[in-house]
Amino acid sequence: MDTSINAKNASMEEQGVFHLFGHLAPDIRVRLSELLRVRTFTTSERVFVQDAPTSAIYVVASGRVKIARVTDMGDEVILCVREPGEYFCPVTVLDGNAQLGAAIAMTDVTLMWAERRAFLALCKEHPALLSVVQSACLLEVRHLVHRLEARSFRSVKERLAHTLLTENRRKSNGDAPTDAVRLTQQELGDLIGASRESVSRTLAQFEREGLVGLRRGQVLLKDLERLAQLANQDEM
Image (tube, rainbow, N blue to C red; front, top):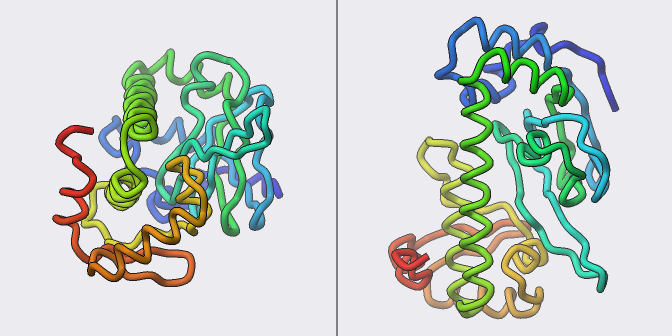
């Protein structure tokens, strides 16, 4: 549902998005707020489909969104999960190619979005904004390389421990991590390239060993130090 509300009519700080651009000059933030619109989606609704033309950049104001790619064999691979204060699709916004995966609302979601051409025009006018987006692209590439390495050379235990720590650290947005990862076992499996059954068995073992606690739809991280040792993060 497109509410056609201009973001400047609401506090971007209240929407939880301005920390992304907080170090930019006030005039750039004002110009950006003038571009942003608000749109809502219900759980399981698609924001866009895989291979669709890229028309906008999106920021999550509330809820959670996953970017998932379906292979030719019909398997789903989650490329990333985005929570409030995070944006997605910067790579395709910059290169103009089709979307790498489908964006699907994992909960009821409110998004702020800016039309691609207008956003790129603002980036051209203010290189500091372009630098923020380019940095996000490079960080995403690094993250995907680490995940590819993990899927190729690490055990399910190591991949799961690494992903739990990475998701917990990423969603903190610079604040103190909450030590709770809100992903289902199927979603964790899609992230690390393992079956839900394998994830379930591994999480049950982690729980017996006091590493995590399990609740419906989330994993509580109880022993970050031991999880880090298991993840071999110094080698990731």
